[in-house]
Length: 398
Image (cartoon, rainbow, N blue to C red):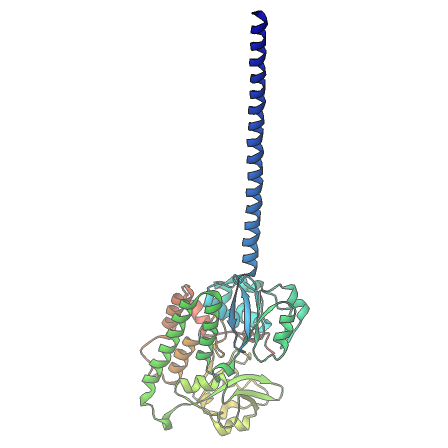
């Protein structure tokens, strides 16, 4: 009997030990499976993140630049450089509301910013480098150091666009006079359309474009009653050169500005685009109104007071009638296409025909425009500075 009990007890102990071992092994197997599963999950997660990163790196959009070239752009544009398209930094600001992305600009663009309201509205523009370009010559090595996502380049730069792209930098060709035959407002519109596509700001671009076209339509309507023989004879002085006075002619921005605001361009039949003239030629034209750009430091008082050596302006009707005006400088010089081009139309029309365009104050129009499109409230002093730019605004232009 004792022997039987002993055998039974030993069997029970054996079964218990085996059961415990099985349970322990089962728990270990579960831990192993869980651990393995966790590793697989982590591995899959790492693969997913890498795929997302790769997708982010390769995610691009394709645009057609103004040279008709296909350009692949990163989905997020964080660093841009603008070359010899001098107004373009200010147009970028108009299109996007920011200059933080601008890491490089032309010296003439920077001098305009330093002497304009733009430096107050968007102070980061002053941090942009200028050492990569002088005149029309671009230093590729210095440009490369800026690590731009995009370089906006003058569309007629020849093979330089391809040269830049050969360095692994996206180059976007931008046309100036040829895109709209010297029409500043329509040139601006073409730039805004392109930037709207690139930055997903099509709605904002469309509103600005629509505003400018409505301004032109309003001016056209008011000028319908002005007879051709009674139109004001105007001249636009672009800059000064060693050999003489450089004036705007047929096909240049000044030609369009004058005609679009009801004046006759006295240089149209003698000068193509722009050219150097002497005082004898100006006496023959005898303009009734003269506009001077901010690409020269010459001011109206220089003509009134005959302070320019070798030039006698006292014989010119515009000077005699004190109808010489310095073109304003807002977020950029108003002569070429710029963010303020619709305001240039209003300013010029009123200067040409104050008796016709007497239903608005240009100071108020400037304030409303800046509030609407720049979300900036100008003071009276700031408006006065826009309308009366200093000589230093011409610095940096070659």
